[in-house]
Length: 128
Image 1: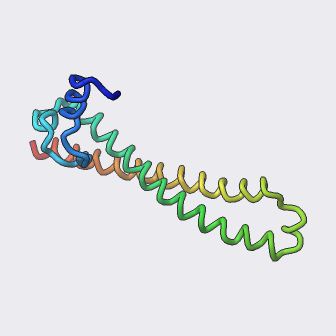
Image 2: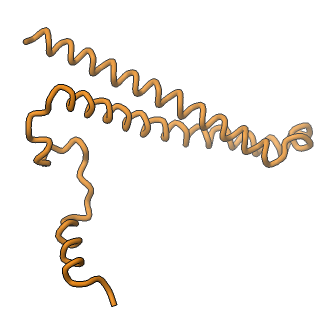
Image 3: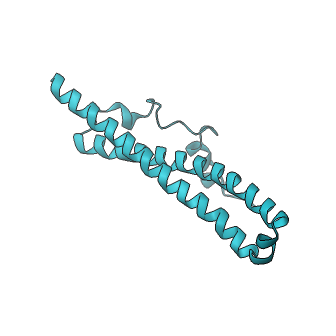
């Protein structure tokens, strides 16, 4: 039992390498052709968004650890926290810090990237 030979060969030919190419590599035929202004603008926006998501996830991970350690130590040491903060409250404190840091850092990164793209686009127009 298994895939028929035609289907297996089709999927094997489609998957030439197990390595995923970086989006910044220029060995793709679609990237070799000259992009229109609109396509270039969409490509830059997607790159900025991806960069913002990546940086936001890093910041959220750091904020999660940075807020979890004092919260979990506090509910075991401080009598008021031990009496009043149940598991749901602890999770809410940790997740609120993570979510806030994600959105703040992602927004700042996207705005910085788009600002750089605008400056680059302006300089390109000035040089022409």
